[in-house]
Length: 280
Image (cartoon, rainbow, N blue to C red):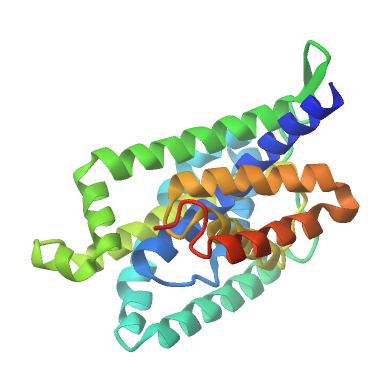
């Protein structure tokens, strides 16, 4: 029964890691850009939910109604007016722009929110439910549900909508997509908006599960990067699977060896299948 408990905890933890990686895999796979500010966007999403929940007197999960559209619009505008223009001058210029954004965001959050640790508290944060001999945190179930709904919704959007098909066509071959009438710059902007919106959701989950600081973005960027590499660049299902594997490795390894096992798993995947588990 202990083994089953570990598996369940690993899957629930891995869903949060998968959500961290979704935004990164969108930018990797579609825009072909390493977004070094992704971790700071996640932390920004956490701060927005932290501020809005008590201000509006609502459950932290309901703050997504406000943060997701706001972050989507921010990402769209950043890509359209700033990062997109830098990309015309080469990948290095765009990379430096995202690096600059990460520094600006980190210092800005430090000035506004100070360096104090923050945490999003909900009424069910300390509650547990018993399923037979298993003890499962209600908070973990809520975060799992948020992650699952977000990733499945994104997968359905990419598969069944006209915009989603345009995004996938651009990911496969941007030149051919452009010849077919796809507005590449608009697609890139939408992809960045989706990545930012997913960062808002990931920020909520991160803030509810762990304490965070303005400087926490680097660690979340690293986790997202590892999950994307393991799952396969641009693969949303691969990100989900990789996140669960990463979570299982951490739970099995515990506080002392969890990260070590996770990064050893990354090295093994890179040796056996450099493109990732679901990479094309």
